[in-house]
Length: 65
Image (cartoon, rainbow, N blue to C red; front, side, top):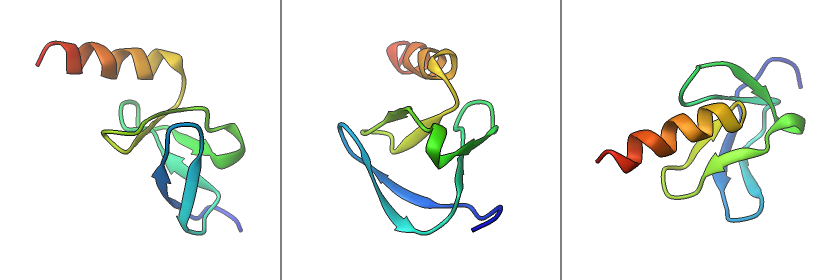
């Protein structure tokens, strides 16, 4: 599969593929994340993050609410 957005359900320690694809988009930076490199996400928000940097940014935003 080439250049197709996947739809995932994010779980506590892994994710379930709802629609096949090869990447998702970071909720903060909008960078493309290949599924084989996906390591950071938020189960409650059902969002993926490119790296720990974006995940920390999102956590800071949620803490301010």
